[in-house]
Length: 385
Image 1 (cartoon, rainbow, N blue to C red):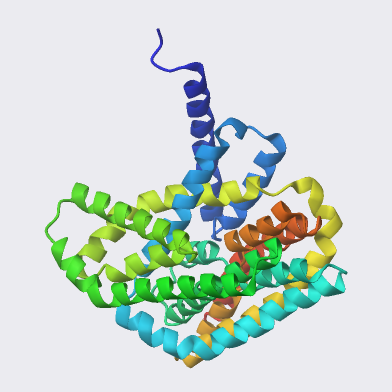
Image 2: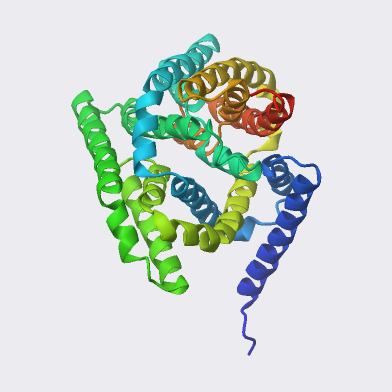
């Protein structure tokens, strides 16, 4: 009797091959001094064409979900609750402009394409919500976590995720024809849960950190991972983004515990984040992209300009210079996981056949453009204060 069943051996072979491919893609990003995200995304698309990982798809998807929450958790570790509160207050006007411009662009584009209102409403949500996962990875790859403009970008992302707590119940009601009263009730529950998560992080985070100050590395890793996954799951159950729960757990971690978390969790974050971006590429059906490429490119150009405007304005309000505003504006362009989720709701309900391919092409363009343009912005503005 062998130690591994044939199915187990196949899974191990596939995952081992995947990790080696990820290593090559990460090396390529390092070699060309750009974010690894474009390499991971394109690698996933190529892998999807070859289709070598199909038996392990569910396992890879779980790893991808863990990657997103760990990315957001590690972003939260970099900032205190007080910094989050102050930057949210500063960023509210830019957040309102972000919603008005980018949601309206998607809604108008859907209507111009001849889609029904529900499909256009979903496209508006997809163009509104930037990718927390892509942006977190880009900021880390380029060493900009500590930059002056970064808190304003994070604040806008938190505002967007909180706005999704109101948007998703309304979208669901439109898809199933639900009653307005039920949609309002769901929105109220989601917003209440988001407020509760925020209050708990602000009020009790420092106390929790003090309790963990003398814990061993093993205990600390287990507690932090458990807390992140529990908070993310609870946030999803309350119809708030899992990323918000993970981010607020990171905000709650402070002092020496935060320093140790950076050392202990970073390798796990890098592994699972790479899995997320490759899986994201795997989810894109390359055969459907050519038919929607031009309208997706036009929409990406329009929303990219709007995202740059709101991101750079938020950075300016936070005291960043021209260089910081340029970096904030370009990194904010990227869309990703949440846009795909929104499109998936419409595809499952059969509201518009072109919605899925359109959003996939749009996300691919903006994710790669955001990663590349923010690198270019850093170089072009390097001599500008």
